[in-house]
Image (cartoon, rainbow, N blue to C red):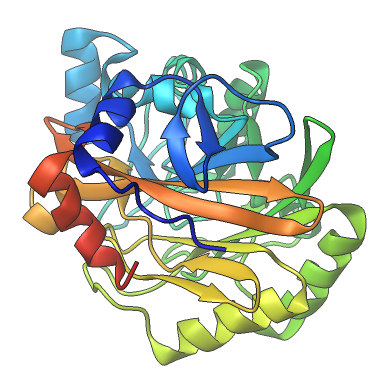
Length: 331
């Protein structure tokens, strides 16, 4: 079920700006005190970069700076999920590739303070400082109580679902990277990220569904800056829903793509950026996707429009927010 937008946009904007706990009320997403019996609220967001221009802003303004504009929203959900672009490590050397990212291990505190509970590491930058960087990233995040998915000490364990119990509901997260590393040759026994292997994908989802009430699948896929998924992505997303997933969320294009309802599930082909230093206008328009989940699956959903300025997202309201919503297709 799609949550209907509020009748009065001004009233909804005021509620969004209050940034209190996220719940669903009267068939639409509002921000208010959590009510019993309304299911589990999960916030899903886009790519997070903590290197380059973002690192300079952290150095100037402190660890909380990049996410303090949306932290109350993320913390207000029962669980918040995003994709982390690049390792948290002070070891090793950069791989010889065009774009290489690394952030200080201290940045794990940035993510924890913002309320993020699960992060996908299944992307083309987690191994930018080799297997050691991946190991450090998992260690620093888990030490802060932030769960990781889509990476592991070997190829098999990287593909395993991450189970999270939230208010009596068991969620299984799966994350897969669609971009082979340009430099490293994967070794099955070494730390690695989960690659997108279409032949086994349905089985992976079905196995996760047997362990959990709800399955959420994250894909790092698609063409950068493209505002529409390919037909191949659509087919794969539909296959995943048919195999038992409730939600499919995409990362990597750095811009928003449509959100589609399909067979009782929900597909967000690209959630764009959450924290990034890109300046193209379309890379600064984003959303946090809010969903309500029960054992029966998806009860409702809506989005909180965002705009990113000086590497920091904030809620977008009025005409600015409507422009962001317009990028998601018919609502």
